[in-house]
Length: 428
Image (cartoon, rainbow, N blue to C red):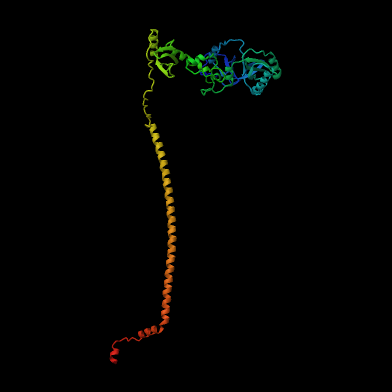
């Protein structure tokens, strides 16, 4: 348990009246004790100090100093002027810390070996933890047992095995869970390992008052006992149950006896069942008082008249409005919708572009095929035309070879034609 020192900054008014006791924790806070600081050395919280031990010294961590130590001593019924209170020797030196770490490293092996020895001696006990003193001259064995254990022979074996002074200390299951530590079903660190020091008895009546199902698995903690937190709200439930009527476990109506199932202290309702059905009927406290009064008068009402527990219309919560900038959560939703639409539009545009590219590729393929067809058609037509021209040329050549004189006469007469047409007339 770490206590907040809310008196830390309190100025020291009188040196003689100042608290000369400080609290030191050992073994990661599982054990704490008070030590006298006669010289009032200014020790800080969390500082390693060497204190008096049994036939030697021990090393611990300063947990509290100043006036708040007096409040802790009053809580634990420890007197400040106790002559048996041990003293703080000095700040822990490097040599003290090295010896302390070496002896602390022996603890896990000591736990295993001590359990094996206890099993060999057939003792009905469980060694939970072994705590070595810083100088290695003493070891404290914490054990759990249901009954009384005769461990006189066990102490002799431990002393000869570990070469230390042996101290046996019995603890309960809750103290063991506090030393081991862990996480509870609530998701937080165990109360017994953080702040809870006084373990009160817990019984199943606390669960019944709080209308909890008697499920041993859910009601048990890490220690295997009922959870300590069952007592936290018990007083609140007991105060609330004072407004409920007594001796109303069974009430009489026309259909038979109605039996009480549970009490709802939050809604002030009492739930009853009838013998002919498994349905549960919620009744108000006033209605139960009235039926009980009628039963005492010898009158049996016709109906239970259960209360209406249908949920009311849900209240419309006001919209969130921020005064700075007038920004609401809807604007964020709009921005998210806009971004989503832009993404969808981009995807659609990408799909359209892909389709257009596919169509263009198809058109290009069709154009190439048409060009090839045109080339083939042009080649065929050009070949036919060349054949026709060749045939015509051949025919003309044959005609010229058959009539060569005609061609020469035609060419000669043409050359002798007179230039002056009057010349022929004079000769006549």
